Image 1 (cartoon, helix red, strand yellow):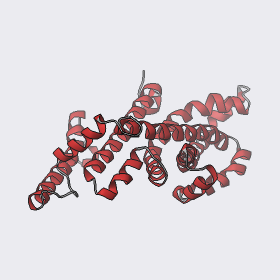
Image 2 (cartoon, rainbow, N blue to C red):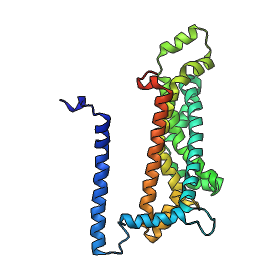
Image 3 (cartoon, helix red, strand yellow):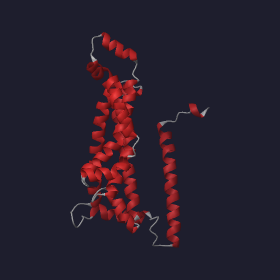
Image 4 (spheres, rainbow, N blue to C red):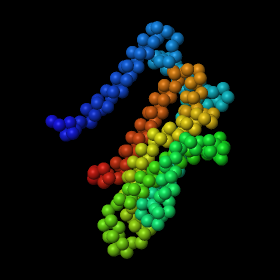
Length: 271
């Protein structure tokens, strides 16, 4: 059987997907054990027991200044910033993507601007945002929105622009105007693509969030990682990185499930 025709069952996919992760964990444990056998106070590759102890303190011990549990306070702060940034980017992507993709005059006017913004490295705008908007929450949220919105807009616009011309002609034959075509023809077909665009934007959004928190923040997952790095606290950094990865995976899975549930026709399924 050719590999291109080899379709795995759900159980086999879980095993195949988990094998590389398990292999990396085993390699890490072997290397960590070797380093600690040579130097019991090694901080570079902490053992699971050390990471558990460090995280237990962050999970259960309130911060002496704020009284909050550090780990959960960091998580909540980061998720709020990420949610606001992605929410704003999604709104702009939906509105501008539909207009640019469906209306040629709007496409001619806004498409060059969106393309120009999309090619600017968002991290390069971080000092500008801090100067213009201050070091508060606004600059961090705006960085996430600016970082992911242009790419999402271009994706939605390209998808709407590639809709079969026959659909537009049929809607016009039935008497639909431009706004009705956008609402009744383009919007329903853009929604599954929008969820896909959000899934693809999750990775860059986390990057921009961590970058902003590392530069100017007093709470958040990125802030905590860059705070403890000066003490070589890998027993905190590694669990925090793993937690960020887990949150991103859960968000991706939730968006994929929402897309399949709300738009089964876009996945070749029937209700």
